[in-house]
Image (cartoon, rainbow, N blue to C red):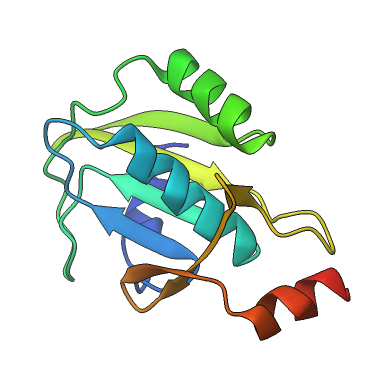
Length: 137
């Protein structure tokens, strides 16, 4: 991903498919997995670290996930699916972009038995009817 593509992503609204976090120094690894689970269950999306949460978004830089390959490996082990992780060197700082694929058809993703989805800016447990819809796909 180049800076121009990143700048387009920064114009997106935060919703079920896009999550933006400042994460200047670090980002909790358990929380990272949870966000990836929720994004996968929402049919994929992006988590972007190193930018302001609200619009107009500014790059502030992030030291989180310094070892990209290790981060990819940990996510693969936790989710059993590959998440693309890139560090983009923007003129205003380093930005880490997680591109999370959609879950397989009929198979919600969980972490420790918790099926997560987004609700506004929060992560919440999937409702029974939502799980049933996915299983019935």
